[in-house]
Image 1 (spheres, chains in turn orange, red):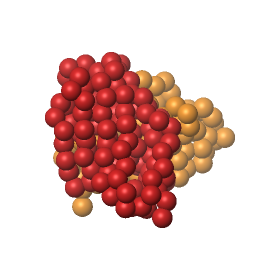
Image 2 (cartoon, rainbow over the protein chains, first blue to last red):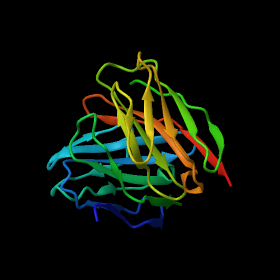
Image 3 (cartoon, each protein chain N blue to C red):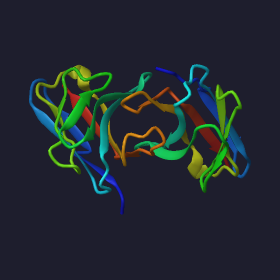
Image 4 (tube, rainbow over the protein chains, first blue to last red):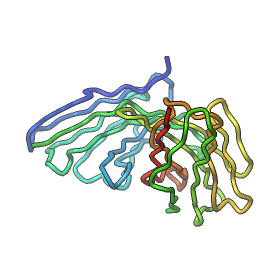
Length: 114
Length: 110
């Protein structure tokens, strides 16, 4: 089954403790991105990747890192999480970055930083 | 970045058609109009997209105005499972990112 998976689905952590949220897709997609969703603000893009070893900042990249060493994986790294990074995070992928392309979303990771 | 405007909420009855409007008056010529929906506690799900012509698929129809400044998502027969937040989005820019608004929360009454 074609899908985007994220782990963990729920995470409660403390300020400053490094964490990684994994994202994997099995559709051989080139384009992957991370979004965060906050009430009243909608979904905002954090980082995106056009292909392996090609990543770039989205609209809200501060406090986050990503890597794309393999085509299928696109982990989101929070080196020193802070409470303002408490949010619902979604990973998404699409075949390529054409404007007509459909994006597939993961189920989401709900992160709470205390 | 071009933005979209949608009503905050709409209501429909089961098995009736639903027309969800969207305004995107600053759309550029190369922007595609996408619709996604998000069911409770799930990730967004692709519904349909188009550029200039009306489009149909198994889930819905998309009617695009001739000047492309607005579009309407049509669910032909709403079911309870269609209750969700519907997002009208432009996929745009060099990044081809999706520009998200706050969407329309659709309630479907039995």
